[in-house]
Picture 1 (tube, rainbow, N blue to C red):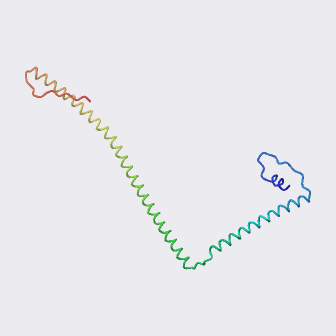
Picture 2: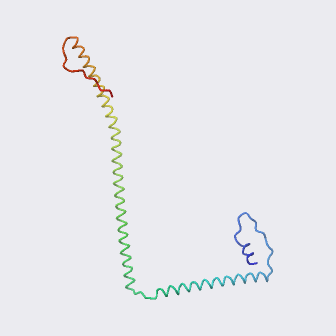
Length: 166
C-alpha cells in the first residue's frame, strides 16, 4: 500500500493527468504514516552509526598529537613552495610575452619583405623589359650599320649580335 502511494506521489511525466484516488480511511492513513516514519527513523539511525564509525576510524588513525611548531614549520614549507610556484609562473608569463613580441616583430618583418619583394618584382620586370627592348634596338641598329658598311665596301670586324630569345 505504501509503495502504491509512493509511486503515485512521485514526479509524473508532463502531459499526463493525475488520476484522483479516493482518500484512504483514517486508520490506513495513520498506518501508512507510521510505516514511513519508522523507515525514516531506521535510515537516520543507520546514517548516524556510519558517521560515528567514520569518526572513530579517523580518530584511531590520527592518535598522535601534533605540536604547534610542526604545524608552523609545515605551513612555512607550503608557503615557500607557493612563492616558488608563483615566481615560476611569473617567469613563464614573462617568457611567453617576450616570445609573443618577438613573433609579432618577425611577422611584421616578413610582411615588409613580402611587400618589398612584390614591389621590386614589378620594378625589376619593367627594367628587364626595357633592357630587352634596348638590346633588340641595338641589334637592329648593328645590322643596319653592317648593311651600310657592306654597301659602302667597308669591312666590320664585329659580328652582328642577336638578342637571346626569352
